[in-house]
Image 1 (cartoon, helix red, strand yellow):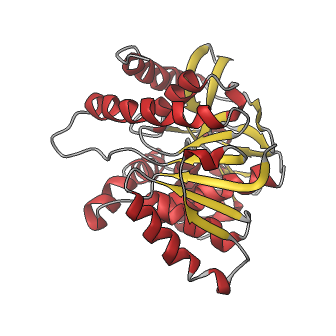
Image 2 (image 1 turned 180 degrees about the vertical axis):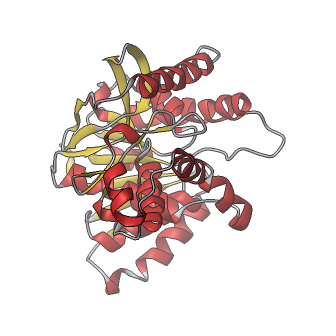
Length: 314
């Protein structure tokens, strides 16, 4: 029987460790197991986190093995290599697919009922790989998708309009990567359409401004990586937000990376698309309104991913 208060983080690099830290602070789980090929790293992270338990919630945090997954409700996979300066994207995909080929069978050896949440990049492709290798229903295998990208859009747009980012309602969808796209056609500020709000604030609604905002959002990870080497705090918070929706059975709408079948004419690929997230995983993938230009860009984004997947041995 699954323990809904038990979570595992596979991969104890910067993203995995930051995720464990964020989860600990929220008190969502009473038990968190850390798994890494470098057992000493996992042990060190667990020890460090345990020293903070007296400041938060009673939580059992420890370095474990795949056997510890047998009753685990949520399994978060952050393990994978980062793209090197001289490495092509397809080389990175093949490298991380190979890592997943060693991880996923170990997970399914001990657990066939839990939820797999993929965070490692390229997240859409690796989530598809996890889905194919695990044999789990698609609703229980999904990725962080464009949840973070959407948060970045809300932040940047909120800064520009001088409004609380939580009042910004807009999505980034598609690939978590260079072909992602903003859905400007339905973006609004607490119900006020974007163009109307722009005119209210500064009497201007310039497509060039929106293009600049989108470019800043799309390229923000590159800027962070250039300045500090990696991104990990915000994605850890995004993963925690997804975990909250799962464990609290919120039925929240989030642009997670989910299997797309018969949506916008797209099939058999994982993309960041708004979906209802509840305790059993993905409850429903939504068809949000898109104009023709946005739909075309989404189809193009999906095809780029499918072209890469076709080169993988899965």
